[in-house]
Image (cartoon, rainbow, N blue to C red; front, top):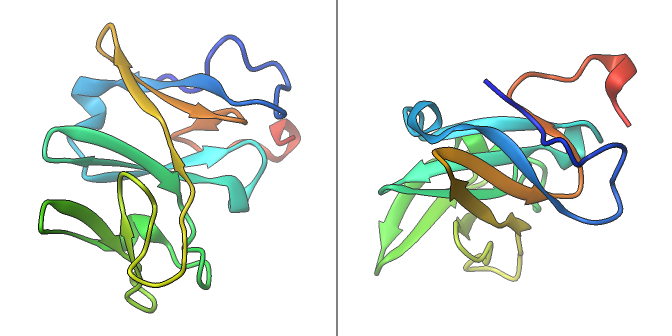
Length: 134
């Protein structure tokens, strides 16, 4: 599967659209971890729920729990992911929680059958080799 886009040469200052891969393949899994070339704390979850893609930071803003392993539920029309460590909830669209916590969300677009995420670093469905980070 493709990762990153051709416009990311070392660009970490501003966000750019990053090619993640074909929607037909990515829609087969409810959540995928996307690795950032900036390392663990910059990884992103790509969710596919009810025919839509959503992206947010992969580590819970409370204690760093793995949100890709969390349950996804809909309540009153709001899709939420629940952190598996302490059950904090985050709106997949806004990143807002029922608490004062806020999770960073990222724009996602579909173009020519591919999924793109707007992010400041290169993203990949496979871990980056140590020599290619940063």
